[in-house]
Length: 554
Image (cartoon, rainbow, N blue to C red; front, side, top):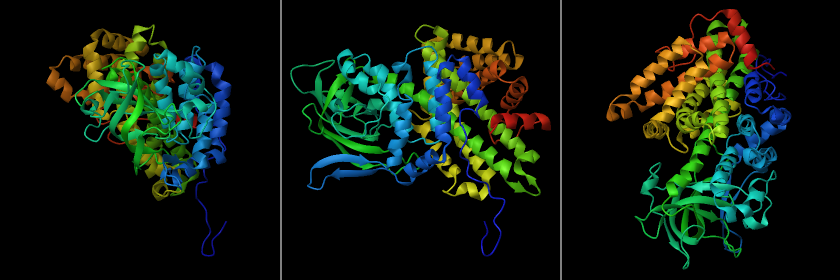
C-alpha cells in the first residue's frame, strides 16, 4: 500500500498465525523428557489457538480496556464489583479449558506438572494479566486440600475446566477462583507486621470455625475471585498470625464485608485487577492451625513463585520470538538485520537466555512433582525456586528492553507487542517477594537444611557429567557459603545468581546441543556477562545461523 506522499515498504508484518508450541524445539524436547508426551496433542492445539490473530487481539484488548470498579449499584446498594472486558473472560476460558489452573490435581499422573507448566508458559506469551487468578487458584489447592470438609465442596468447582464469571455465592457456581491477601500498607513483604484482626464469631474456635475480620489489605490480588486466603491476627493486634478463607458472599447469600476502596493504577499487568480493600467484620473460616498463618500461606507462595518463574520465562521466549521475527524481515544498510554480525550476536545471546530459562523452568516443574518422595527434588523445589525467581525474572526485564532496541522506535510505541512485554516484565520480580527477599530465602533454606543444599549441589554436578567449568563454579559456591553470616547475607544476590547460572549451565550441558551448551557456559561464566546482551565471543557464523534458526523455526 502507498501513501499520497511516499511508498510504504520495509515495515515488519504482525506476527500471527503460528503455533507457539511446534515452533519451540526446546519446549518440545523438555515435554517429552519430563514425561508429558501424553499432553502433547493438547499443547499443539493450544499453541495453534494462542497464535491465532483473534486470540492475540484478545490479549491486546484486555489490556487496552482495563477492569473497572463499581462500588454501588443503581439504587445505592454496595456491590464492590469489578467488571472486565469480554476478552479477559475469553482468555480465562482458554486457561481453564486446558486446566492450566489445576492440571496436576485434576489429572494426577506422571508428567502432569511438566504438562501444566508448558501450557501455562505458552499462554503467558500471549497475555500475562489473566495468569494471576489462575496462579492463585492453582496455589490454593494444596492448602485447601488439608481442610477435608471445605475442600469436598470446593473441589469440583476448583478442578472444573469451565469459567464461571457470575458474581454469585461460590456454592451456586460451576467453577470458582481463589485469590490471596497478605500485604498491608505498613509491611509489604514483612507479613509479620500485619495488623488485621480476626475474632471468633461465636463460641467455637480453632480450625474450621468462623471468625470476623477487621482491617485492610494494600494489595488484594484479583478482587473478583470467589474467595481469598487472608492472613490476619487472632483476637488482638499482636496475636498470632493465622490464615482464613474469606468468601465474597456469606453463607446466607449476602455480600461479605470486604469493601474495595480502589483499584491500583499499575505500570503493567493492566488487564488484571489489583485492589485495596477493607474488612469490616468480614466473615472468614480459619484454615490450618491457630498461629500457623505464615507457614500456611507460604505453602501457597511456593507454588506462586514457580509460576513467576514460568511467567517470566514466557516473557523471555516471546521477546526472543518477536526480536527474531523483526530481524528476519527488516532491512537496514542493505542487509536483513538478522544477517548483520553484531545484531546476530544480540539475538543469539537472547536465544541462549531463553533456552536456559526454559530448561530450568521445566526441571523445576518436575521437581515439584517428585518432591514428596525424592529428597533431591525437594532440595530443588525449596532452594532453587526462589533463586530462579530472582534471576529469571530480572533477566526478563533486561531482555525486553534489549528486544525493544532491536525493533528501534517501532518497539517503543504501544501499537506493537514490545511495549506491553516491557511493562509486564518487572511484576514477577516484585510479586510474592522481591529480589532481596528471594535471595535471603535461598540462604535460609540452605542454613536450615545443609543436607538439602548438599543434595542440590550433587544433583547439579551429576547433570554436568564432570564438566570442569561447572565443577569449578560449584567449588566457588561452597566457598561462598562458608563465609560468616553477615558477610554471606550481604552477598546473597551473588550466591543466588551463581547458583542459578551453574544449574542452567549443567542443564544445558546435559540436554542441549553441545555447541549451544558450550557457548552458554563460556559466556555466562565470564566476569562481564550480564551487563548487556550481545557480548558473545568467537561465535562461528554458521553456528550462529543454525542456532537462531532452531530458536524460531516458523
